[in-house]
Length: 277
Image (cartoon, rainbow, N blue to C red; front, side):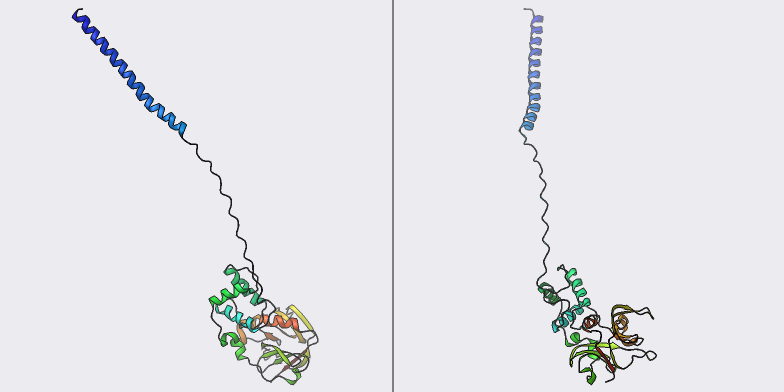
């Protein structure tokens, strides 16, 4: 075989071998890329399905405990309650010992502020929280400045029999007396010089819970009329400014809860005594 043919044969074989090797390598590289990807996709677990969490159950509303003190009560414990509420600015005015509308409103506000069931009545939880926030009331806190100043004098003899509103202009007090027993004492304010409160023995002839004066347009809640247009009634002005003002002849009371209780006790026909001691 000639030299030229030998060279052509060698080149041809080399080309064939190179082509086979390249094809095998390309196939190998192609398989390495494709097969694992397919295998990974086939073996990958499906994504978990998210199940929404059940809604949280609402917490049950706290229930109030048994009533310890409430509207209508009258006792030293109520006076202590009022004094403690006054220490933290929930009760305005002097303690009276009577659980009326103002006391109930103060208790409701205290309960609402602290997440206690709002009832306006005192249960053990309410009382415990109040005691934790206050101190033992002093004698001055229990009596109040107004009651300490208005000490009643001797009881008029005309007040010792029957059911009597005994009003003392000397000490500015009203005492509710039944068969000689004093059941309640309230501070009073009387008419100015030009419109004085008349003295004498009268009787309650009319009651008007939400009365408004036809002459002056002023509110006269819990009015108990005893002589013409003169009546015993609650005065918000007396409660606000004290003895800096005066009435138009009526007997003003500044203790809202106290007169609210008194209004329920007094009957038409009960005696009214207005005097100086």
